[in-house]
Image (tube, rainbow, N blue to C red; front, side, top):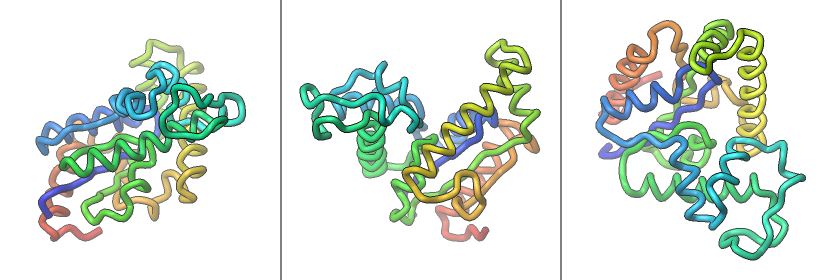
Length: 206
Protein backbone atom coordinates (compact mmCIF):
# COMPACT_ATOMS: atom_id res chain seq x y z
CA UNK A 1 0.00 0.00 0.00
CA UNK A 2 1.18 3.54 -0.73
CA UNK A 3 0.08 5.13 2.54
CA UNK A 4 0.05 4.13 6.18
CA UNK A 5 -1.59 5.64 9.24
CA UNK A 6 0.09 4.53 12.46
CA UNK A 7 -2.05 5.21 15.51
CA UNK A 8 -0.40 5.02 18.91
CA UNK A 9 -2.32 4.54 22.13
CA UNK A 10 -0.15 4.73 25.20
CA UNK A 11 -0.01 4.42 28.94
CA UNK A 12 1.22 7.56 30.67
CA UNK A 13 4.98 7.43 31.07
CA UNK A 14 5.48 4.63 28.54
CA UNK A 15 7.23 6.94 26.08
CA UNK A 16 4.53 6.71 23.43
CA UNK A 17 4.98 10.31 22.30
CA UNK A 18 8.76 10.02 21.98
CA UNK A 19 8.43 6.69 20.17
CA UNK A 20 5.93 8.21 17.76
CA UNK A 21 8.22 11.13 16.98
CA UNK A 22 11.21 8.83 16.44
CA UNK A 23 9.15 6.48 14.28
CA UNK A 24 8.03 9.44 12.18
CA UNK A 25 11.67 10.38 11.55
CA UNK A 26 12.56 6.81 10.59
CA UNK A 27 9.60 6.52 8.19
CA UNK A 28 9.86 10.09 6.93
CA UNK A 29 6.26 10.94 7.81
CA UNK A 30 4.73 13.55 10.16
CA UNK A 31 3.72 12.72 13.73
CA UNK A 32 0.77 14.54 15.31
CA UNK A 33 0.08 14.78 19.01
CA UNK A 34 -0.45 18.14 20.68
CA UNK A 35 -0.63 19.71 17.22
CA UNK A 36 -4.11 18.21 17.00
CA UNK A 37 -5.30 20.68 19.63
CA UNK A 38 -4.37 23.72 17.51
CA UNK A 39 -5.79 22.13 14.37
CA UNK A 40 -9.01 21.34 16.26
CA UNK A 41 -9.14 24.91 17.51
CA UNK A 42 -9.06 26.14 13.93
CA UNK A 43 -11.76 23.64 13.02
CA UNK A 44 -14.10 24.44 15.90
CA UNK A 45 -13.45 28.12 16.48
CA UNK A 46 -12.68 27.49 20.16
CA UNK A 47 -9.46 28.75 21.72
CA UNK A 48 -6.68 26.17 21.81
CA UNK A 49 -6.02 26.84 25.48
CA UNK A 50 -9.59 25.95 26.35
CA UNK A 51 -9.47 22.75 24.32
CA UNK A 52 -6.14 21.75 25.86
CA UNK A 53 -7.75 21.68 29.32
CA UNK A 54 -10.18 19.00 28.12
CA UNK A 55 -7.92 16.99 25.82
CA UNK A 56 -8.54 13.22 26.09
CA UNK A 57 -10.94 13.70 28.99
CA UNK A 58 -14.64 13.11 29.59
CA UNK A 59 -15.08 14.00 33.25
CA UNK A 60 -15.97 17.63 32.57
CA UNK A 61 -18.66 16.82 29.99
CA UNK A 62 -21.53 17.93 32.22
CA UNK A 63 -19.69 20.97 33.61
CA UNK A 64 -18.47 22.89 30.58
CA UNK A 65 -20.68 23.51 27.58
CA UNK A 66 -20.08 25.51 24.43
CA UNK A 67 -22.47 28.34 23.59
CA UNK A 68 -23.78 28.71 20.07
CA UNK A 69 -21.93 31.95 19.35
CA UNK A 70 -18.44 31.41 17.95
CA UNK A 71 -18.81 27.65 17.63
CA UNK A 72 -18.88 26.42 14.06
CA UNK A 73 -19.49 22.70 14.43
CA UNK A 74 -21.85 21.99 17.32
CA UNK A 75 -25.28 22.96 18.55
CA UNK A 76 -26.01 25.13 21.58
CA UNK A 77 -25.11 23.45 24.86
CA UNK A 78 -22.84 20.73 23.46
CA UNK A 79 -20.27 19.53 26.04
CA UNK A 80 -16.80 20.76 25.11
CA UNK A 81 -15.36 17.23 25.27
CA UNK A 82 -17.78 16.14 22.54
CA UNK A 83 -16.93 19.23 20.52
CA UNK A 84 -13.24 18.43 20.83
CA UNK A 85 -13.70 14.76 19.92
CA UNK A 86 -15.70 15.70 16.82
CA UNK A 87 -13.18 18.33 15.75
CA UNK A 88 -10.19 16.05 16.32
CA UNK A 89 -11.88 13.20 14.44
CA UNK A 90 -12.44 15.48 11.45
CA UNK A 91 -8.83 16.67 11.61
CA UNK A 92 -7.52 13.09 11.79
CA UNK A 93 -9.52 12.05 8.74
CA UNK A 94 -8.31 15.09 6.82
CA UNK A 95 -4.69 14.37 7.73
CA UNK A 96 -5.14 10.79 6.55
CA UNK A 97 -6.43 12.03 3.22
CA UNK A 98 -3.28 14.10 2.75
CA UNK A 99 -0.88 11.21 3.23
CA UNK A 100 0.92 8.87 5.62
CA UNK A 101 1.12 10.02 9.23
CA UNK A 102 1.39 9.00 12.86
CA UNK A 103 -1.37 9.99 15.28
CA UNK A 104 -0.83 9.84 19.04
CA UNK A 105 -3.93 8.99 21.11
CA UNK A 106 -7.30 10.70 20.49
CA UNK A 107 -9.02 7.39 19.60
CA UNK A 108 -7.35 7.62 16.18
CA UNK A 109 -7.46 3.84 15.72
CA UNK A 110 -11.25 4.03 16.10
CA UNK A 111 -11.61 7.09 13.86
CA UNK A 112 -9.62 5.37 11.09
CA UNK A 113 -10.84 1.82 11.70
CA UNK A 114 -12.43 1.56 8.26
CA UNK A 115 -9.17 2.40 6.48
CA UNK A 116 -7.07 -0.61 5.50
CA UNK A 117 -3.95 1.57 5.75
CA UNK A 118 -4.42 1.98 9.51
CA UNK A 119 -1.96 0.16 11.78
CA UNK A 120 -2.79 0.53 15.46
CA UNK A 121 -0.22 0.21 18.25
CA UNK A 122 -0.54 0.36 22.02
CA UNK A 123 2.60 1.23 23.99
CA UNK A 124 2.82 -0.04 27.55
CA UNK A 125 5.48 -0.43 30.25
CA UNK A 126 5.60 -1.69 33.86
CA UNK A 127 4.08 0.75 36.34
CA UNK A 128 7.31 1.30 38.25
CA UNK A 129 9.19 2.11 35.05
CA UNK A 130 6.54 4.63 34.06
CA UNK A 131 6.53 6.26 37.49
CA UNK A 132 10.31 6.61 37.37
CA UNK A 133 10.15 8.14 33.88
CA UNK A 134 7.52 10.71 34.88
CA UNK A 135 9.33 11.57 38.13
CA UNK A 136 12.55 12.24 36.26
CA UNK A 137 10.99 14.04 33.32
CA UNK A 138 8.72 16.29 35.38
CA UNK A 139 11.03 16.68 38.40
CA UNK A 140 8.44 15.15 40.71
CA UNK A 141 8.61 13.00 43.82
CA UNK A 142 7.87 9.32 43.36
CA UNK A 143 4.52 9.67 45.17
CA UNK A 144 3.44 12.60 43.00
CA UNK A 145 4.55 10.77 39.87
CA UNK A 146 2.59 7.69 40.89
CA UNK A 147 -0.54 9.79 41.42
CA UNK A 148 -0.04 11.43 38.04
CA UNK A 149 0.39 8.07 36.27
CA UNK A 150 -2.76 6.64 37.82
CA UNK A 151 -4.78 9.81 37.15
CA UNK A 152 -3.79 10.22 33.50
CA UNK A 153 -4.19 6.51 32.77
CA UNK A 154 -7.69 6.65 34.22
CA UNK A 155 -8.53 9.71 32.11
CA UNK A 156 -7.25 8.09 28.94
CA UNK A 157 -9.03 4.81 29.65
CA UNK A 158 -12.33 6.56 30.35
CA UNK A 159 -12.01 8.73 27.25
CA UNK A 160 -11.12 5.85 24.95
CA UNK A 161 -13.77 3.46 26.21
CA UNK A 162 -16.47 6.16 26.25
CA UNK A 163 -16.03 7.02 22.57
CA UNK A 164 -15.01 3.63 21.12
CA UNK A 165 -16.82 0.95 23.15
CA UNK A 166 -13.49 -0.93 23.10
CA UNK A 167 -11.19 -1.77 25.98
CA UNK A 168 -8.25 0.60 26.33
CA UNK A 169 -4.96 -1.27 26.32
CA UNK A 170 -6.48 -4.68 25.55
CA UNK A 171 -4.47 -6.62 22.96
CA UNK A 172 -7.57 -7.33 20.86
CA UNK A 173 -8.19 -3.59 20.44
CA UNK A 174 -4.98 -3.02 18.47
CA UNK A 175 -2.83 -4.57 15.76
CA UNK A 176 0.14 -4.65 18.10
CA UNK A 177 0.92 -4.10 21.78
CA UNK A 178 4.52 -3.40 22.75
CA UNK A 179 6.34 -3.02 26.08
CA UNK A 180 8.69 -0.08 25.58
CA UNK A 181 10.76 -0.99 28.65
CA UNK A 182 12.10 -3.99 26.79
CA UNK A 183 13.69 -1.99 23.98
CA UNK A 184 13.75 1.67 25.04
CA UNK A 185 12.42 4.53 22.93
CA UNK A 186 14.84 4.16 20.03
CA UNK A 187 14.75 0.38 20.02
CA UNK A 188 10.95 0.32 20.07
CA UNK A 189 10.77 2.87 17.25
CA UNK A 190 13.22 0.85 15.16
CA UNK A 191 11.25 -2.32 15.74
CA UNK A 192 8.01 -0.57 14.79
CA UNK A 193 9.61 0.84 11.66
CA UNK A 194 10.42 -2.67 10.45
CA UNK A 195 6.94 -3.94 11.29
CA UNK A 196 5.19 -0.97 9.64
CA UNK A 197 7.24 -1.41 6.47
CA UNK A 198 6.24 -5.09 6.43
CA UNK A 199 2.61 -4.03 6.92
CA UNK A 200 2.83 -1.63 3.98
CA UNK A 201 4.36 -4.37 1.84
CA UNK A 202 1.49 -6.68 2.74
CA UNK A 203 3.72 -9.28 4.38
CA UNK A 204 3.18 -8.52 8.07
CA UNK A 205 1.42 -11.17 10.15
CA UNK A 206 0.53 -10.76 13.84
